[in-house]
Image (tube, rainbow, N blue to C red):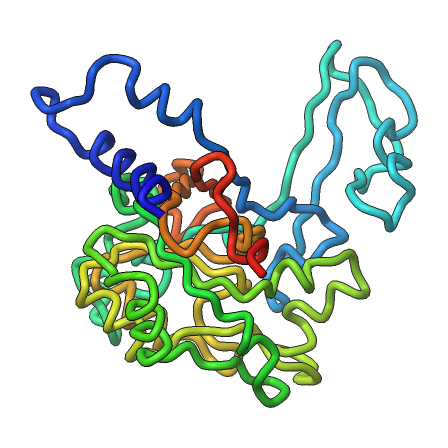
Length: 317
């Protein structure tokens, strides 16, 4: 356990150190080289449930592929199986490969910034405040990374009525603290239920992830924190959270949870995967989005750094 805690603590210290206090040259590189990188990001594809069910579906097409030819990737694999181009014929604008996308900024593994639910003060709308100016291009990078606190919620996954999310409560968070240690300011609190691992599948099976709970109301939704839970975490100095559900808010209505945390200037990463590869404590989480002007959120590559050989929660008996 000391080795595991050491990786997270050392990374946090190295990334926050003033120049005069910085570790010897190469120490951070050596630390990362001797660790394991875990990809926590879903692969976005047009035949997977990467988009919110009431938003536009992700679309892509190949605009050039070395030379004109029938869609070089449309049958690799066959249509309906995995990733594919939507355009059956591909022209060539030059001797290279390139794609174009139509994508909602809240697609796949994504960050939510305060502006997503908090209007700016000039709007004079409900919940308006100065944090409403915090779009993705203005958001501090430091608040999108930190020591990972992974809370195991597998026991409550699917334990709710159809059309509702199981609630992640303050008591559940405090129970995790009693077992693994208190949450500190700057920690990234990660809600692990295995939801995306179980339900991120090609359509039509993929409807179980978000369409069935949200639209058809024929299945339970993903675990989601209560307003009190996110207020508790914000009060402890948590600036970033992550979840393997498609939203941090519950399926029955997410505005209140979003407002309660984002109004504090916090942010979070939704729709992660592979969280079970992380230990309860000791990994370091990083989530960085494309820097697009005025973004309320953004497609993100989320990763974690953990000690080589450290067992994740899903790998423990």
